[in-house]
Length: 117
Image (tube, rainbow, N blue to C red; front, side, top):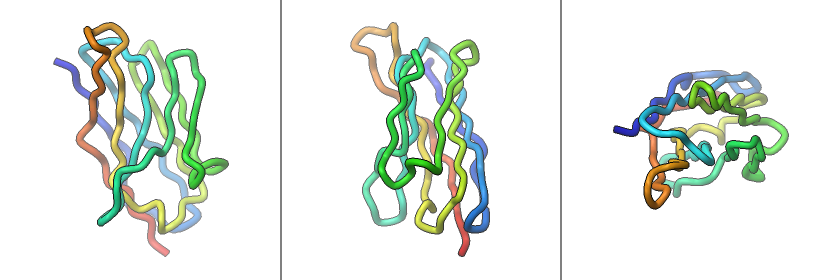
């Protein structure tokens, strides 16, 4: 059974930092990433990282958020600095299996990040 388990969310003041972690199990993963969904809005890309370390980030977080991964631990991280109230959302981990038929995508359960002004 493939699982993604996120941790690290919480409440922080504007300008502060948080680090999210997502541990995967059940398969080896290719591209891993983070998405977020604010109340009443569509889910949007935060950042992705390939198995070789190539990254991509949404325009709203470039220069403030950093994605990284540890392939040996099947873990992806999101370091969030200079947080703003508009970063408030549920953050979801996403990962694509690198070996299962059809290379399916999986989602974590989400972790709440709240940034107070």
